[in-house]
Every structure is written in C-alpha cells, then in structure tokens.
Length: 542
Image (cartoon, rainbow, N blue to C red; front, side):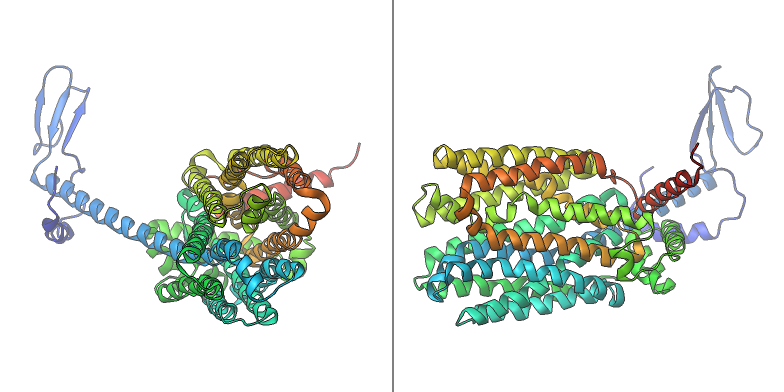
C-alpha cells in the first residue's frame, strides 16, 4: 500500500494512541486451511482450496504505521551512509598529498635540478628524502592517533604538510628545499597512517574495503593531478624557475580543504571506547549506523573485543617484540604487506618515468610528460577496478593477480631495454605494470593492514607497517638512478619482477581473507588461532 510522505507524522502520532495487543499486522493472508477464522470481526471467503482473511481498519492503520516507520528508518540509514561516505572522502584526501608530490616531482625534478644547480646525488636525495622521513612521520602518527584521537592527528598532518609545501615553494637552494621535503614527509607519513585506520574504524564491513581503498585511489588521483599540473605548467609558463614553484605551490590546496571539513567529522567510536567515553561512542555509532539497535550491537561487540584484548600490553615493546601470538601474526603480516608493495619498484616507475622514457628513445619533453600521464592514468584505473571489486571478489584473489601481472610486465619492460625494443612497447609495459600493480598491491595493501591489527595496538602497528613501506619507498627512490648505473635498466626491472613473483607466495598462502568480516571478527580469528596453537603446544609429545 502506497503512503504519501506528508501523512507520515500523522500516522506515527495515531500509532502511539493505539491499544496494546491489537490483532496481528496483516493486510491479506493466503492459507491452505479452509477453516474459518475465530475472530468474528474478520471477513472470511473460501474457494475450497485457500482462504483470504481481510483485516479491519485498525489493522490497516497498523500496516500504515509499520510502513511509515520503515520509510523513516530507511531515510535515517541513507543519511548515516552519506555521513560515512563523507568521513571516508575527507580522510582519504590526506593521501592526495603524497600522490600529488609523486606526480608533480616527476615533472618538476628537471627544472629544480637546473635552477638550483643540483648534482645527481642531490637530486636523488631530494626525491627520496620525503618517503624516508614519511616513515618516521608514520611512527609519530601512530602514537598521536592513539593518544589524541584520529581527527586531531589528521589535522596535525595537514598543518605539517602546509608548512613543508610553503618551504619547498619558496626554496632558494638545496638546503631549504631539503628542509621543505623533510617537513612535508612528516605530514605525508602522518596522513598515510591515520586515514586508513580512521576509515576502517568508522565504516561497516560490507563497504569497508572500498572505503579504505579510497586512500589509495586518492594517492593515484594526486599522482594524475600532479602529472597533469606539471604538463600544463610546462606548456603555459615560460620561466623555468616559476614553473616548478607553481607546481609545488598548488600542493597547499588539499590540506586546506581537509581542515575546512574536519570539524564536521565524528571521532572514531572504537577510539572513544578505548578512552572509556561510552556515551560519545554510542552517539557516533547511532550516527553512522542509522539504527539504535544496530548501534547497540556494535557497541557491545567493540566493548567485548576491547575487554578481551586489554590483558595485552600496548606499548611499543608489544608491537616490536610481541609476546602474544594474536598480535605477532598480524604484525608480521602487516610488515610483509608494507614491504612487498614497494619491492615491486612502482615508486621508481612513477618518479622517474620521464627519464626512463628518455633513456628508451623518447626525446620530446612533451611526449615524456604525456607518457608519464598515461602511466599514472593506468595506475589510477587499476585502483578504481580494485575499489569496485574487492568487497565482492575478495582481497586474496586480487593480490595474487596483481603480483603475477606486475611481474610479467616488469619482465617485458626489462626486455625492452635489453633487446632495444620500440619505445611504444616500453610505455605499454609500464602502463600495464602500473595497472596490475594497482588492482591488488597498490589498492588493497593498507585496506588489509587496517583490518588485521588488534584494536589496542592498531595505531602503533599501522605506523610500523607504514614505516617499513615508506622506508623502502624512499630507498627505491633514493637509489634508483645509482642502481641503473650499476646494473642497467634491464637488470633493475628484472630485480623488481623477481620480488613481484616472490610476493605471490605471501599473498596466496599466508594472508587471511578479510572480505565481509567486521574488525572484531578478524581480531577473534587471530585470538582463536593463537588459542589453538597454545593448546597444541601444551599437548604432551608421545
């Protein structure tokens, strides 16, 4: 029965005045029983095989009331889901900071080298320093997020990045530029840790995968944006000194946008419960679920998980040297996730793509920049595919396909240099490498990392995983030019391919599947495995 929206309030008021114990809320019921109903108020008709019971007007009003309440509940749920999407989008914007730097520096590097008279080593230091410092920023972020909350830690990351971007834009020599890169790296590292944790803690399981993957999608949005901005500055600004300063200066826009939205975002309910702020956590859960009963169930589940895990110490010693197997396993898996993502060399393929293409025979600066945009676009397309499919297909299949595909096209890229194949084939292999990389290793790494860590150590463990990830990323960026000088481009790509193939063992056999599981269910999974392992260890040896 259709119900107009303007009748909802009147129906709900009338529903409150109805007596308790009225007849069951049914409009028509078809039954195989030919016996007459016992209630004399009900109309009965029979065709010999089935009976139709028509309820009186009070039953119709019950039906209307239930429908009204259902519509209101659905409207509330849609509103809560919009809030979850807003939280995920705003938190994910922190990742644009890293992506934009990667994309724009791949274009700006040659102008920075020229205008500031940088040596080859200084250029490598400038490129790699941000990610090396981001590793330390990640460690700071973990402690900050656990102590002061996810929102305040995000705000701190934005303020640090703003300071670093201004310093880089105004740099007049290598030292000032390096200082700006160091400060920016701290901001990038903070945002890289906090955003996935915050999103994972505030989204329901059925959409958590694609919501957390927004952080990686935004990295690639930033990469594409940086490469496009770099290309446009090359084509429209005549002064080389102004070109790179404009490129870097535009990087202050995303943190300003984030800070403007941050005040309207709720704090993580799991963090609030860790601080024993139960009323606030209940309020946030009602906001993000849209249903009081669901919020209460989630509140109880989180409290039970916290209570189960509070007998485990949560200082850094428990993360670095875990005594409890339920923490040791996720920490080791998180370190593996952080390592293998960067061991494939994806960062070098983006940072140095113009130089790689120039070495392969692409001489035009405009063509190098367009090739860089194509590589970044394929990387972005892979992220979109992963975001749309990971909650249906699962994490592990995408990881395995990603690692195998990346290894194959890295081999092809190495063969292009070894056999002097056409530059177009190299561009194609790099584009497909980045596409396959993003489908799994790029998009899902920190989705799974944010899911597997137990709540009491989640911030610190996530920081450690980001530390390893950014540290290796910085090493790759810092040593790539020296590595190709020592081992050639072909052998460097073969080395990256070997790590990609090796990672399939880790993804296929060691990682658990987390699709569709709540964070509490994942924690219980490790707790059960730990209990079974301890029980098996206590059994006497025959």
